[in-house]
Length: 216
Picture (cartoon, rainbow, N blue to C red):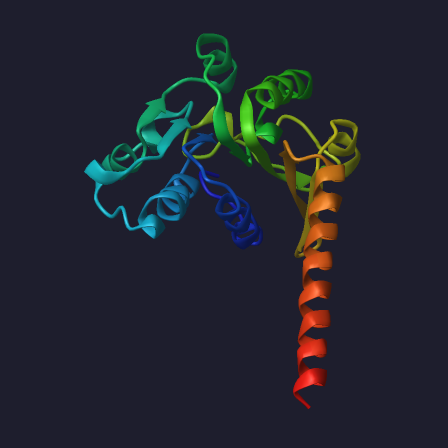
C-alpha cells in the first residue's frame, strides 16, 4: 500500500537526527510520510518554518502519479515520476540519506539487488531500507497500481550478505519486518567513539570523587 507499518518510525527518525542532512531521497514516496518527517526533522526543528527558508533538498521517486497530491508538491523539492530503475539510470546525484521504505519487495529480486548496489554508491551518510521479511506478506495490485504487487521475498541473511551496518527486526502480529541500515562509519570508528565516551565519563567521575574527598 502507499504507506507502511509504524513500528520502525521512531528508529528511523533517530537515525536522521544523528546527521547534519542537506539532502534526502525518499524512494517510493507513496503517501509521503517520510518526506514530511524528514522535512520536519531537517528544517522545521532547525526553526526554518517556511518553505522559502528551507535548506534541505528532499526529493522523491514515485512510479504511480495518482499518489501525488498538492501536499507532496509542497513538501518535496523534486518528484521524479518514474520507476526506480529508470531513475537510477537517468540521474546520478548522491544524497546524504537515501530511504527506501517498503520498496524492494515490489521489484524482482535480481533487479532489486542491483538497485541496492547503486544506492550503496550514492549515499553520503546512511542508506535506510524498511522491508517485510519472509513470504508471509502477499500483496497484489492496490488502487489500480501494479507497482504495489509483491514480487520478491527477503530474509535477514540477504542484508547480512550485503554488508548492512545494522538490522533491527520487529514482530508485527505473527510476521516480521526489518529496518536495515548502511552507514559510512566503520565498526572500528563506532568502537573508538564508544571507548572515548567511556573514558571521558570515567575521568569526570574520578575527578568528581577526588573533589568530594578533598572537600570533606
